[in-house]
Image (cartoon, rainbow, N blue to C red; front, side):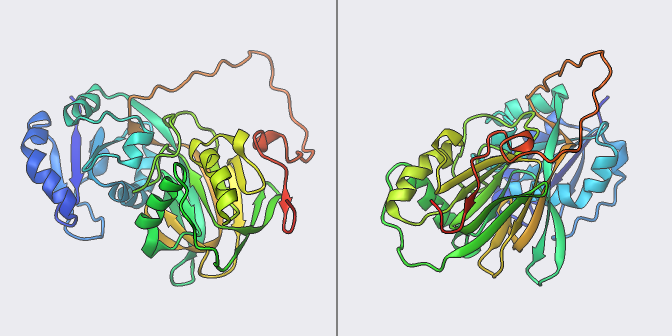
Length: 338
């Protein structure tokens, strides 16, 4: 028989509290022998022994999911083949549930958890400068936004989503921000930018949908960067930004797929927001952690057929920008070029 642990932050989040008050009787009736922990503060101190549970069910927001995984990742990673993490979001349009292809209805979410269908999920480890000016690292489960003012995040994301359909007039006078991109020893871009994003899922946390496909066997994370502030350029670039289609990439829109990316930039305006939480600023390094977390999901891993022949040892010759890890990368753009 499966052993379940339910963890929720309903005593901290008002939205989670309303969801839990409405649905806790039904949820507990579906998992009658589950142990329940309701967090009372921002520190994750679990008195129970996690190793005895087959599935840990998190009930709350995307930020709570991120908080739990970052707090318990050492345990989860050590037992990634044994313990699965399930998610019951307390709201619709959850970025994590959308990226993992979770059903919308609560009854279907519970049915999925009972089925035990799981998949190993890729994460991104972020090394950055925190708000106090110290180096720190954090796991991103869904997205990282760079160069967006944190206090204006919800309004700005709604504005960006609107731009993709009907572009309004943008502020014409802003301080330009400088950025440099490097991957596997190669310089990819150096110059000004408006904002950028690392994406694992299909939707920005607390924001609009970016692409239609669910997250499965990604191997590399997607990187999007908008470089121009002019109305004409933004109008031309944003459809490609929100579709994730590199065919629309141009001098003002930079798109690539990477398993490692270093981003350099000076100044407090180069902010970093991980899964909806403002954590610090550039410079930062982002590294893909393949199959780092087992989650309950309807997605099915694709089997890769391997040849029985001996593996050919590859040379250590440097790879050009247009090959290898950068199959979809556009030519490098230097500052002052178009």
